[in-house]
Amino acid sequence: MADEFPLDAAPQDATELAIEGALRPQSLEAFIGQQKVRDQLQLLLEAARIQQRSADHILMSGPPGLGKTTLAMIIAHESGRPLRMSSGPAIQHAGDLAALLSSLMPGEVLFIDEIHRMARSAEEMLYLAMEDFRIDIMVGKGAGATSIPLELAPFTLVGATTRSGMLPNPLRDRFGFTAHLEYYDAAELEQVVERSALVLGVELSSQALGEIARRSRGTPRIANRLLRRVRDYLLVNSDTADVAAVRAALELYDVDPIGLDRLDRAVLDMLVRRFRGGPVGLNTLAVAAGEEPDTIESVVEPYLVRIGFMGRTPRGRIATPEAYAHLGIPHADVALRFDDL
Image (cartoon, rainbow, N blue to C red):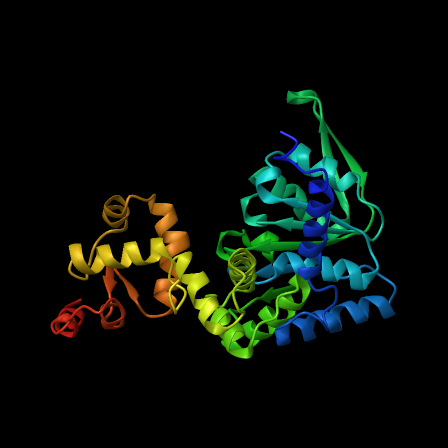
């Protein structure tokens, strides 16, 4: 057992945790990409600092992996305020939110990830808390129930959501600023990979950095994940850190030159070969691919639609000519069928 778990495992784990923290930038200046959002946040935070008040409530929306949690940490750091973190699924009762809000220190930044998944009763309590910094606690039941107001310390709420359309309008309107994060381009992702490679101690050529960036689907989180797998590959194989080694590592993990993984290709192949390009319903496609419909809709479909490999029509999902070309399958009659949809 001693051989399986060396005594220095704990210090090494601590080092890895420190590296994970270092991968997140600590300031808006160090944050790569999202230039417009950074400028807007910088202005908002500076105005709050000059007026010596808590910053307005901030809502950040956009696909996962673009830096919403990192920006929340930066907001707290640059405001010089403590940060409290929670998530929508963890707040399933109004009492959960009341306990969280009543324990906040003056000026504290409260970050709620996936805020659209909060319970409806908690959302309604949050309206008053965001506007007037107080909540009403109901004591008793039935005709004898009494509402007791509880004053809250001023705080800044930072909410993050991947589905802003699921937020009720009264909640969305109470945020003083809404930022929408966009996917990164290849040049920005190359900067992200370069910075992360320095933190991880991996020396890569510019071509190797670009190779990882092109396969990262416009998402820094994916770029960092692929970089770690490349680091592991180089460590185990003692290979030269060139573009050939990077390609070999990513091919080992089923990531193709445009970022499609095993599941993406399986769904696309099923759509093209078995269903002849569609249209086919989501549930039928999911059963054929052996996955849940939610997985296909939320994980696979967004990227395939964004790069133009899949289309959504009233009759179902369809494969585009670009999808046929990527799979190397003739598609002479595809354009004709597209015109009929």
